[in-house]
Length: 635
Image (tube, rainbow, N blue to C red; front, side, top):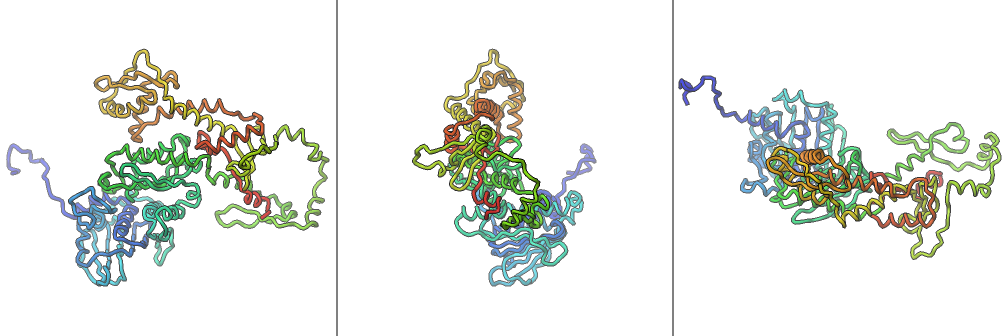
């Protein structure tokens, strides 16, 4: 094309081919947005190389240094230059972009990092000599000999020095270091048979270890449970339910916590597809849906779930960072998560998290009250940093007890225990449970009811301790479960509108809401296409009474946009059932007979989800005898 042509504007832009350095810097913006992204790419390469021990070192939040050391298969001297070329990889051959069994496959990470930082790779394969190559700002050096016993060391210095504008968007060193830790922890969850060590070497030297996990042993579930206990904490491991389900080529394994072990945000939700950590809207929505009926909207479940499937059933090549996936059958993946988690929660029965008892015992811990503690032989011990103060109770001698009691002011004469029967019974109801049973009540999970205090709390004795039950919250859950069961069996009654309400929508919104028309009709909301972008609402759930149909349709669309699904109608129906259950349950302040309390305990044991009320709060607290004895210094 000649620019001298008078029919063509002289201001027309000219198309040019970018050089490799510019191309790599552009690619780096997609693959590496912060130091944690670089750590993720490099650690994934180490895992793909078959490493069993990986050490990650960083300085200044990863801005000045990132070093990955592994014991993997290594890279031969001849292939080191090729490893730094764009779209060069050993993971795939390019014939089938869906047949991916490794973390990496795009061949972009190393050249992208070399384009924006100072990158060096030192590697050794078997008994062959070690070799090193480096690249700075896209300029590659020659391969030279190096000293290394085995594996690979990748060192990245001065990240983004070639693109200084990116440095302005970096956060503080502490925030970047935390992001690196989060990335390493997620990869460590995905690979329980690999050991990981993370060091902060800011200031030089060996630095300090900020995170370390050794390779786990045993079968997959034992290894995964051990790894999650070390990363997410012992409390999560104690209160997590094992998940193992399979459907049409998709297998779901992992651990999901009880509803009473919930969090204030979604920070404890970890999702993996074929071992790859992902942040997928579909999977997050499915997890939320599984716990939908057991948690209030401001609480979030904790879980680590792994979906394994044939690579052809899922596309991981959606985004350069590979954090998003697309399933061939999204409904199958969602249904597998929801059904398997709900099944596990139902099998948990009345079980509540151990953290409930821990929090209760913490409230019972005594506070220092001055010199009177010393007179009784109670000596407060200095707490370790970050720990609660715990008091050790020594056995005081008879003389010390006598002196302490005599030092107190004279107490007014009180009636004896036998004189308090009438007054005490006004607050506490005691009774016998001598009726013959095949199994003694104390041997049952929730034990035998012994008393009712404050007309709301049932105190029961078990073989290993005691249980305190909130009678109103417990019975509310039992009634609620019965109402849900009845609704599931009989369906949701719908009321036909005398005049169908027409809701005008865009054609896209109309098509989107019609995709969920069938499940909505099962909940009593009947929607039909009305032509153009409009829909006609013909029936609404009778249980909801008068409904603003247009507002409900728009709210459903908002949920579909936000989470890929809508549970609005179900939420409204279950909120009504919850209110009915609340009004129909045993009220606080009602005196209960012994047989009524025991009947409530037995029904709780037989009813799924009875360990938490309709809002996710615990319905009972179990205290072990050993913990109670420790409170009184008996152990």
